[in-house]
Image (cartoon, rainbow over all chains, first blue to last red; front, side, top):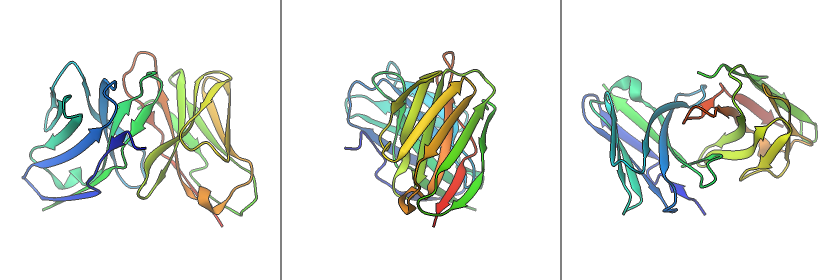
Length: 112
Length: 112
């Protein structure tokens, strides 16, 4: 059973607007979450992370929000740029702290 | 960037042949991982290593074996390749003093 879920396979946004990518998890013991970005023919690259002791983490245009009671996190990109078009993966560190559990990814397309 | 290289970057092989993919890192990270990425499935963990000669299975380990004889090298072997193993394979590392995984550029494997 999927422990990290990204229920939207794709998202289309206009340049300058906000992109909101969502992620849900099932295990309440998860306490650290990461977002990765992946361009075609490249490996995923780390984007931003959040610990369960926080409900928000911001880095430039990227903000991740964590709602522990709902087991939900979201990545906000403001303003969106065409170069943000990529696949975004949400991940959680497993309980043993030894590996990441990834969602299936959301493909973001930002049009100019 | 954790100085991760993968070889080969592309390979086409036939069903039933053995295949070995190599991951090399220069950062002395303790943990190393092999993932496969497939449409609709995101990134799935095949095997991982938490030290020289110490390995463990991931979510989709059937048909794969791994070896780690040196800190910097992690090999993934398909003993007898099948068409279902056609995929893009990513290696990743995780150091003790980092809270993110770093990914290599990927190997695209096609099994005919």
